[in-house]
Length: 158
Image (cartoon, rainbow, N blue to C red):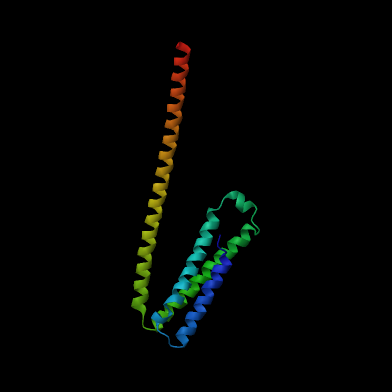
């Protein structure tokens, strides 16, 4: 599982590199990798929170941190990354790249939707395969039981 604090630290580091690049008058396209690293780290914060929320109750019972400690860490991490993203948006605007930022956000929304649909389709396929496997196993057991009964009856008659 991804540590929330590590993801926030990665987002902050990427943000500092972006800010340094802006201060040195670098163009947005020159910082593409660093901007991508920031958003990757931001997504890791969200992913870590989701993984923790979806982990089993047994894992939560034996977690090293209290529920309150985790909740505080998750909320602060989200707040911090939102503030950094707002500052990044302002940097785009200051560079005269508001349209580029808006387009990036539209593409991001479309890509999130596409990935969600792909994940749902994969889960549906996985469930269908599991259901089919279950039916095949039950059918094989049933056919085997019938064959055993017929074999038993035939041996008794003979």
